Image (cartoon, rainbow over all chains, first blue to last red; front, side, top):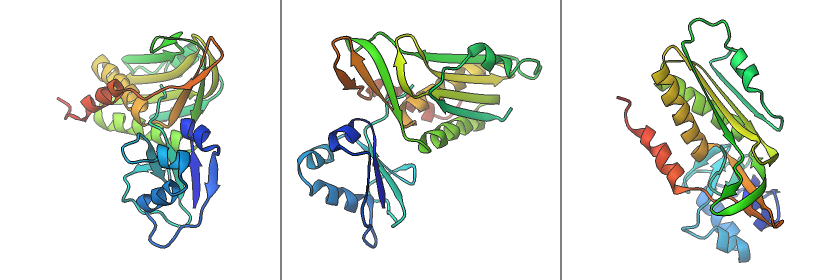
Length: 82
Length: 156
């Protein structure tokens, strides 16, 4: 799966995208667990209670949402346009 | 002109040209055009420049969906949303919401609702450069969430 990062999180994580293999029956919660296990800024920024959004295939979703092997996942801070 | 038209662009937009697209259409009795611009201060900090980042693809999709939601709720002729991206200077135009309808009430209300939805849903992120040379990502505001929530009530 492709993971995109935007805004402040793109800067803090030092990357705008990466590719990870999606395990069978993957979900947003599962992906967040994998990313938090990297420790450091990943554990800090993606800790429960921190303000960030996850989109799967360009739709903001809750943690229980499924992720397919070819999904486009995006993680970003609350939006500030307009 | 399509009922919902969306443009995400680095280039500036021309208000007179946007208005001109509706010239001669006698079904349109009311046009509201809202323009958001780069302000020189934010949370007490003096701002020098602003850079807008977005999520290509999702941005256009969300803006179109917001326009369609307004069309479903109010009796409108058309909705146009233009949002700029990239580096912007003070007083530059950032966003245009243009709503055309037969009567003013629908146009005023829909324009306000579209801006409230855009502020809380459209994937844009602002980074400010302060006069001292530092940069800072703008935080989302609770007041924008509250403003968007008022439209969740049934229309009266």
